[in-house]
Length: 356
Image: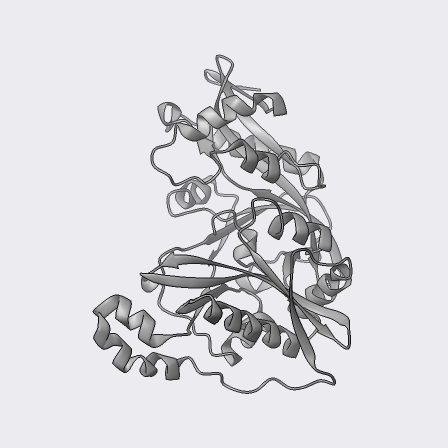
């Protein structure tokens, strides 16, 4: 299938150097995948989560790529296949000529051929208008990002100097827990691990029913590939009750807003009170690491309520340094009982993005 002076096909693993040359042609440091190790892990892996890389080719060189990853999704009890578009790239010399559109059109065809029920992606501010212009992508909105101040003195000192520590108690009060979690029979024990056990498969399925939204099935294999790989900067805490696994939470931290900020990347749990216990454990861990603020993306009602009860708030978008839009496109493959048109019909966290 040809489009003007380029052709569209799937990239091959042997073209990795051409792909990396394309990545390095981008101005600045906005794209993290400028190493062969990243592409080997993210798209060319043999862990069962490899991707197809749709490529635009001109004179034997890649001038644009759109990786398409296929994941198992759950929507309550229903099993679905979703195609995730990540890391779309177009060489600066070939922009505004239709390369981006041809990559997306070809990816849409590929997703349908492989039986995906929908395509989804989390575009940045620059890419969002392109998806909206296509006309067949649904935009539920910007993914809400919850925030909690852990150390008001440290946060204010970074903004207004030493005097900030004297009034740091004020933001601390604004983010106090609303209630104590119910104790549903047994003490919850928290443990840091490098890999999660296979028992997480059942926890993930229970959490899908609890959360109610359309979500990637967070199996142990998926979690260990996505959050515990050799390039991972993440930390996983698991929760056990009487020796039995009941949940897991993945975190990381980054310097933002002049302070170290903790990010809750992913979380699954059997019950709401276990969800709250994991969030509280992550908060303790962040405090030990010197974080002044913690954040978490959430679109599902059960996670929203757990975050609110633990003292998190939804701040104005203007003060958040990074926003994550969400768009999806039904492929027409049968299998949905209805279309998940509202944001709360989905379960999306930082862990669903490559840009954390």
